[in-house]
Length: 580
Image 1 (cartoon, rainbow, N blue to C red):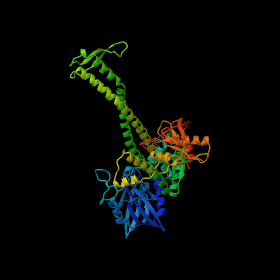
Image 2 (cartoon, helix red, strand yellow):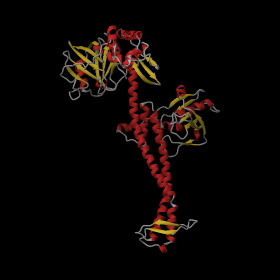
Image 3 (tube, rainbow, N blue to C red):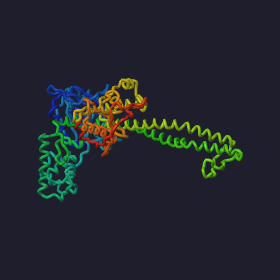
Image 4 (cartoon, rainbow, N blue to C red):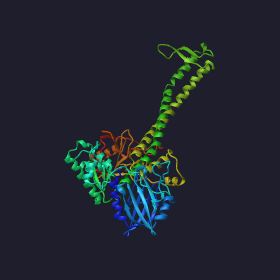
């Protein structure tokens, strides 16, 4: 996500307004890259989060609570030594770079806490009043960078600067001069000439001037060049006057951009925040939450997919054995034919050529023999194969039925993982996989927690006719809904022949369930199933008393009778509308 000099200027403005002359009361380091400072100012406590995370580098005031490790890392201890009880005397953004310098005074000495927001090169560096580095959250030696070393005891130098102009000091003449001969698209030219302007901001300047962002210099009329300067100057006048409106773009429920002001060149909805702290709390909590959820989903999903693959391989192997078993009569026939022709067969023969008395045309058949056995022993060998194959058919069919049930179960678990919306849901699925022996228990403490785990709440919806509709989030909930919550007269629904959630319509009066409610519940069943992206999904429904669970069946697996089928199209908008 773009994090340019304009955004950092907006952050600086908020920090100055809130933290200037504040006292640092507490310092924590919550992970390898992130620290938090608790700052007391104007009778209020403020938490400043500073992170050099390669993917999520940032600094802002946060209202979120973070878990602190039991033992403070060395860098945190050093910050406490030099900065605890210190006063923030100034906050600067040197030359409009992506750097903020927090000047802190303590016991007559001055320190600089420099925060460099530069992607994977981001860093947090503590420097004394002589400019000597005391330490950094990420040390950089000559093996990591030939241009710039960062470690205790050496002089701090700013990152190498590109030959660009500070937009805050640019005049109209300089603007025209520096943008006179570019061949790049207009928005890229703005970025290449002026410091601290990211792609979103550059495109916004060009768009507000009435120019298509991809237009090159030669294609811009003179009046448009003046419009370009006008909008450039207007944007940076707002920056100088600290007139920011932190915003995020929302596109189909996902954040598409963050910016110090709403972007008019984007068509999606903009959500404006009171300050940068609120914006970044919203953005990073959502972003990091989705990253963590994605990681857990990948881990659990890979386990389930591995067992699913093994299951399918076993089914394939057993199908081949079943084919052999179902042809067991061939072994018996060969044994009988050998027995009927013992008089013409001898030990040492590799095959027997005999008349097939079972064939109406009495054709000759060749039967492989074991030359080490007598003809009689060869016949007995075929009879034994027949007996074994016959006995194996029932076992194989039973085993295949179990594997089919497991395949259904694993596909349902996989769907639950994919559609999970919270860590609690995924934790419950993990506990289910542990209880079903697909995952190992982690520790004794975890085991106890697993044993005491409670089933979480299902999704709750309200139909147009005011009937409550419940939807299971995972297999445990599906069992709980169908066996514990549902009354016999409640309506139970499930997508036909696909993995999906159990759905219950709670009957609150006698008589038929309204057709609209039934249709809405069917849409929910289709949406929370493997058929979510289909145009037409079959959903079975019946009274809950017709739903049964076989003894020993895995969570969520049931069979049902006396059902009817309705066809619906999954509808996300309807799902959102029905949520309680």
